[in-house]
Length: 527
Image 1 (cartoon, helix red, strand yellow):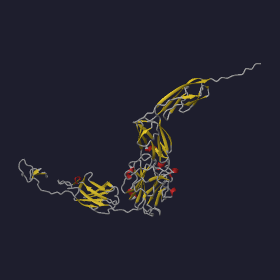
Image 2 (cartoon, helix red, strand yellow):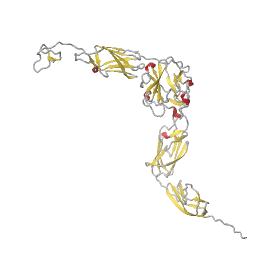
Image 3 (cartoon, rainbow, N blue to C red):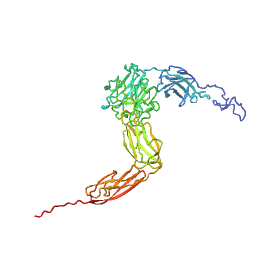
Image 4 (cartoon, helix red, strand yellow):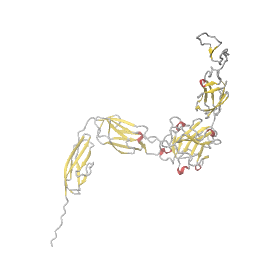
């Protein structure tokens, strides 16, 4: 650190000092050497350039040799997003080669951060670029033959000898497929496991193109058992087969269409190949994955990277998909008691009528009154069901009945849809008037012999309906019949008890019955 010029500036003043080469005992080295900051003097593709190739490199020429800090550049594109790139440096020129091709027609921007670029000389400051650099260019729009994945059959009978993937051009026919690549993705680690180049191929006169096992007479053959059963994905890209290396991670660069398929676990990683919210498909959604393929219904419907238009159908490689008429979900046609009804009798049952035949899983129907869950006995079906509470409804109660959507299934094979579209809930209020309790009573056919049937006639009365429980006193099983008969196997006097239950309460009545032993009379012979 020396005063420039020598001795200038005054005591306790440092403004004239500068960093320079050391000169002990001689005049300070005060020669002024001007430096300029590093700058980018040219870029290829040029700022605003159009029709840039999909695999173009980016060349940056600096005004002097520079050192590059970590993360010094970014290549951000309209459709394909951020691009990683290899970096080659030759004195003042830097070449960025993107690791994945750009997408057709998109606009890309190259950004360089000034603070991360420094010159290589020792004359500083200045050391960095004065400001960030930015340049924009547009990728060429590549016109490819339009085709979508139309049908896929990965799980087939006979050790997977009828696998295939079908493309469809919308019915135009004879559409060239050059410039397209089919890629198969492994759901186990979301990496690439098969590449099929479509250069030189075309759809047939009806617009179909089939890749598959020899048994389905395809346009391109692959070995049986090659197409994995899933969860996996099949995708269609623009580009060259050389751009897709076995084992490479998932990419959406150049992606045109995709199908994610497989039963059981959903592969959320592979779902990035689809539009947001589109589901993974299951060949077994109708209960027989070996018999069905996954197909757009109707052919070509739904659009690229969309799977909601697919259905599990009978396979039809190279021909129109065998789509059945669309199904509608089962629905509630009517309920009783009516929603929001009041003064519902305490002995009322629930009656539910559906728009088509259905089956219910355990617990498909629930009933609670004033937050207490009531037990139900459900009978009937497959279209009209009657649910009877096991006791009278509570008086003056607010009741809620619930039909759970996912627990009710239609009985046809045209699925999906299979279940109610939403859970159905309705409320009603029971009457506050409590009827009087029943009066229990019965008569019997009197004394009986051992082994003879005792017949009981129920004389109970009261507001109903009434439910009955008979206990015959001899330890035999009880009966719920209105007028039961009971066979006594032992002699004695037995107490029979009848319990009658109605909306107004419960009553009991007991009486005895004599069971007599049988007597055997033998004749006496006198000789």
